[in-house]
View (tube, one colour):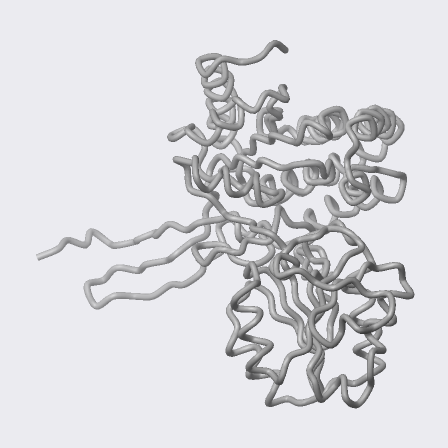
Length: 423
């Protein structure tokens, strides 16, 4: 497709938006059984189209390698048989979740004779703008469908072929269950003008969810005229408290950084309590070095052989690579002060056997996810039992933390009387 003018882009998104809006009329009344059948059908279609999806992904990988994408970005982009199976498993897991639509959130009777219920209802049309992870195509579609929403997907230019192949399979599943194909649509162009058009599509798109790096999210927040569920950087911290168990700390720190370095739940900064360091020495730093991680160390830690002296800019940095910033701190207050200054509100973990210290960490910080003696890599909707997620919302309005099907609903009030009138 040739470069789009603003007029062309607005017309394209308007067409997709109108189709999506029509689809919401069917989805709003779709039974839980029909949505379940559509998601299971989509999972089966994903598996059946495995070879087609892998061929498309190979084409994307070739282009990405030619463009010189980082290893972390290539890892996000790459699909294999196990990742395709994981997408299908995610669809099935979402299918088995309780249907959030129509759930009675609260109900009460009034002295005036009215019975009032607050009931979960779909948001409407969701726009998802994401970068190089093609599996987001399946996750976003599954969660939107489960929550009765239509979705317009705009994947990253690097994953265009992979996302299109996944989308094609998803639609087969929807149609097999009698749901509209327009329930899940993809923007059919790499042109960035289409993103801008989504951001100004008031009346057509009800909420925008950006899934990507700081540049993308910042652009969306700055330019959107549509409400946004913000997913900022994953500047995740692990704090090894003076009362941490050594074996647990070694296991968690290594996993938090190295399991997958290119995801938003990867630890980017390790804070070591001076008491822990006095007792155990450089063991946590050495474990990271032995695993091939570039350790950017502050202060006294920079004297450890193999580390690199940290620059001020290394703190508050989302590396998405085998790099971590480390720093000694004097107790829980210093650790929390550092996290408040440099964190992104995503996920922080404390390693401690002291219940009072853990409670202070939980009470004193306001990140979307706080953990104790657990790897930050668990910051994931699937691991939280949501089946999948569209992202980790770091804002404070409406949705926060992993955004699953339940978070993609709003509510309405159902008021029942019996010829009741107001004086």
